[in-house]
Length: 117
Image 1 (cartoon, rainbow, N blue to C red):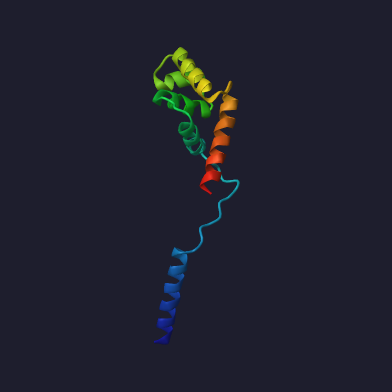
Image 2: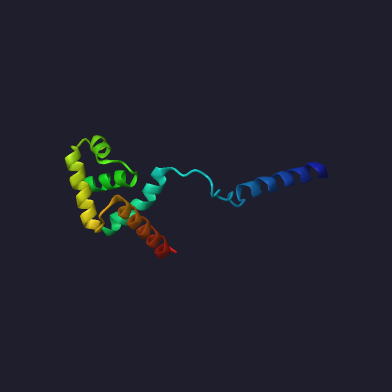
């Protein structure tokens, strides 16, 4: 009789510890989806600058590394319109290139994380 009580107690303890165990550590070499990174970068830019909806869409695609033609196809606009909206994003952010825009997004994201800590 004591054996079944002991095994039931051990089973309950095992169940409890598995439910409340510390989460597995995050692997530093685990793959990260680009969309996850972009999703993390967007709020800092959108919060800081007043982008229209189309500018936000263009911004997201620029951060994903898409060219003007691809952006135009994805959004159903002309390449000229895509370049115009990119120009507006660069003007509002006071950047002159896609690379500078990515650096700005990273800096704003880092500042936002520090502010939350």
